[in-house]
Amino acid sequence: MTYIDLFGYFGSFLTCITFMPQVYKTWQTKKAGDLSLTMMLIVVLSTIVWLVYGFALMLWPVIVANGIVFTLSLVLVYFKLTFK
Amino acid sequence: MTYIDLFGYFGSFLTCITFMPQVYKTWQTKKAGDLSLTMMLIVVLSTIVWLVYGFALMLWPVIVANGIVFTLSLVLVYFKLTFK
Image (cartoon, rainbow over all chains, first blue to last red; front, side, top):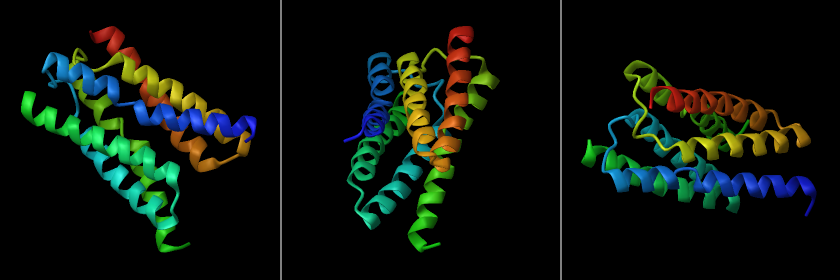
């Protein structure tokens, strides 16, 4: 593993956890009015596209990262539609 | 270019535009209270890491996508600190 690989793994890790603080905050406050539903729907769509790409080429880092972000973005869409 | 490559390009495109609706909405409403500052700072950090990775290996799709998302996330951090 090279020095540069470490940046790739660290970047993947950060990408995976990106939406966790937002899910936590929205769950705590029960307020999602300032969040863009369009943004979340783009995240849902983009992660589906990346999952197709990842499974087609069996790229596990792509599959794992986008599986996690896909799940978190679905939670945020649910919060957005529930909490208003 | 294969069929699968198209998914990769479409995924990259969607990733690039992810934060645009949020920047637009926050600019319009001047309200960012429900947005997680931690999320945005993770996006800033992760895109910096991905930019280092992209420049080290000269991966243009990684550089372009993360350059755009980095810029939009900086705008959102500014909005978050300004609009409250």
